[in-house]
Length: 387
Ligand SMILES: *Cc1c(COP(=O)(O)O)cnc(C)c1O
Image 1 (cartoon, protein in one colour):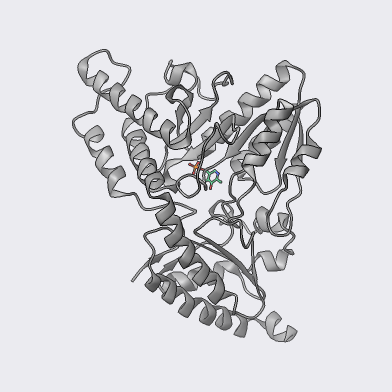
Image 2: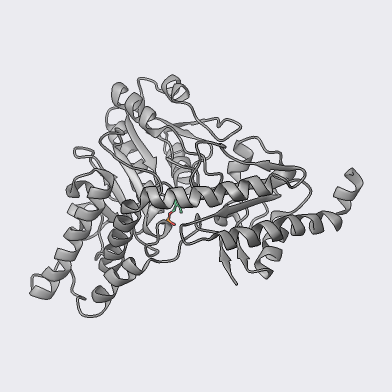
């Protein structure tokens, strides 16, 4: 038996996504820029996908730009807003200290180029208040970028309120909605979002494809230069199959959003309830405003990596902190941002569920995690000494 509980890292492709992709990889292999009928068929698939994605987030199809994924969308959104700001002499950017690295590292690069980046401190439960954002906005602020939901600890941020503040103050608002898409409702108009990033492989679509939504009138800067694809804003022959798969996956996820969220939330709460019983365990993230599938804990006295390997041997796929930091010994910047001390941040476990998980999966996790944590503590001289 294998239990896959690492859906924040990536998800299994849905049958709908696969079914939408296969014809593009077999008979409909034309280049959408070609004038012949095979090319025009591909262009049609592309437009159809654009309409589907737009409908899922309350946008118009011409506001949808296909990218290679969430990271590229984040990069392009932020670089574009910075360029627009700089042209008006505005070089101040507001964000948070627990964004994804695709955002944080782009901001770092802008800082080197002369922008001033203000990272709002995150509260103990991984929250940011609209007041914090409002207080940080200055006359020279060109961009606020705050994620919709955090990929490690699952906190859901008040993006509608932040969007309203930014609109009121005339500041562009970008949100990395990679973890929210397909799990939480998104309506870019109602939520006053100017720029938004999505990634297909986080909602049962294929890897290597994503979306940048840019409100009409928000001028994008190219990060990939070349041909005139994506209305001249993102060069390169389109990943037609990936885009078709993404559109199908998103459409399905959005159509089942409430039903899936209810199911996953119930499984999540069983896990949180059960794992809270482990002595010296701390739940990370907001206990209430939380992604339906996110369970994140720190267990004192253990190493997250050892926990993962032992769980893997039991057939459980989980994660410790973010996958991007595995391989380095630095604890997760997200756990440090919410104030976890280094030694506690090292003992973290993230379980991220999807609607494909079952009660049996939860049973197995609840049987194994406490056992493995106890074992690791029993062989830790430091823990023994402390007791
Ligand atoms: C996965 C993820 C990304 C990166 O998306 P890719 O498509 O893998 O580049 C960005 N932001 C968040 C919050 C993510 O979870």
